[in-house]
Image 1 (tube, rainbow, N blue to C red):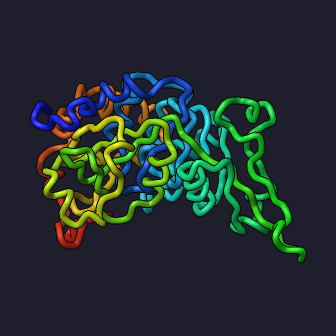
Image 2 (image 1 turned 90 degrees about the vertical axis):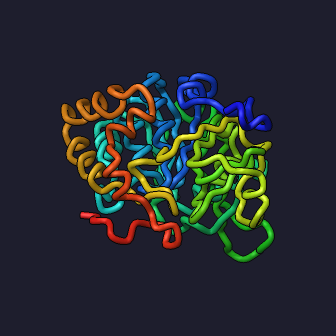
Length: 325
């Protein structure tokens, strides 16, 4: 770490980043999408440190969402979708928690959640859209009036109003902005100057980072400034947005990281079986989260053969011969 003087004050371990920035009751945004680029190393760190009562805000997430909820770290969720693709069209622990009333929950469309983060990034209190008109997203609310009095919760889910620039019947939807306390994203590269480069689809990660008070970036590699300055249009976030940088190769496992590794079907199938049963899920956490002392120990447990099996073709971005059953 001493080899990167420009970012020396931002470089830290998973445990250090959690301890410094993530507190009980915080509003937390997590990046990635279903089984792609979830910030899993940080999520495991949050679970190990016993952070509670998180107000989770996501565009569409999967494994990270499910582990945090299953481990009892989450009090409240605002999200468009939570699923692990073919392994769980709806995340299993997430679904169980909603059905049992164990977490407070409010849903928006994918586009609406993207717009809410965009509004936060732009520094405006709300944003307008036509998305959602004619659907039950408009008609049904998940949060009670009591919850809406709490900090970081919008006083209303949304507002439907007449377009003030059109005399004809022309309804628009006003969506409240999101400004999370902390945003977690996993990227392929961080430059030695702190510039972040996400390869492949960015989903809502950039807007989530721009809207947050604190941004923690985990990454596969820290690269020279010369690399970051080549193809500068490929860069995603400037250094001044980033508060903490954590180098964790395979930090998104068992989800995928484009151009580095594919998702791990063996582990996701193992997780699916465990998540369906309360006792098996507790055993899963004991073995895969509490039972490892560091990310390196976690990777040793995953095993070199598995990591090689999911290694991505750098041109295609995924592992073409991977058995995905």
